[in-house]
Amino acid sequence: MKYQNENDFTKVNMFGKGSPNVNFAKYFIGESFLNPLTDFQNGEFPLFNVTFEPGCRNNWHIHHADKGGGQILICTAGEGWYQEKGKEARELKEGDVIVIPQGVKHWHGAKKDSWFSHISLEVPGVNSSNEWLEPVTDEYYNAL
Image 1 (cartoon, rainbow, N blue to C red):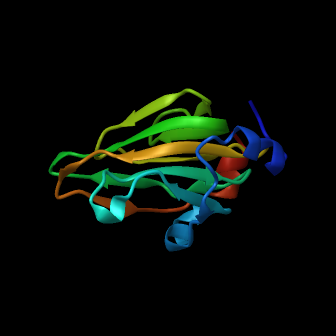
Image 2 (image 1 turned 120 degrees about the vertical axis):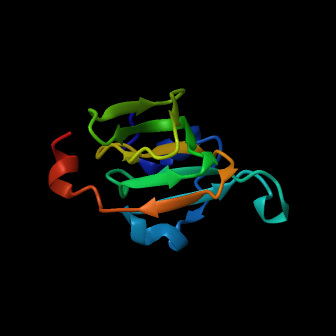
């Protein structure tokens, strides 16, 4: 379901909006927010609810690993987009699960007319790293 009004979205965003995503803001167009769901700084598996304001999306990026790795997205509120390089963009809705293997160039974010949240799970891997790439341009995004 689309949520243009932040107050309406907040009521259904069960994992919470969190704080502005200042550490990764340079890799996003628009404003995103992070809400840690685990005590990752004390060794718990890192799990975050990521919230995107309408129109917000991250840059193209790749999760690298020598073995294992990748990312899983569990869509929890609002509507968004996910796209792998060379494939059509896919609409995301509450309840969708996206499994992104390591090495796949992709981006994800909110639709231009809806707030959006997903839980982000970085799959453990050997020598894991993220490579942040070019932004998803307004021209490209607005054509979706």
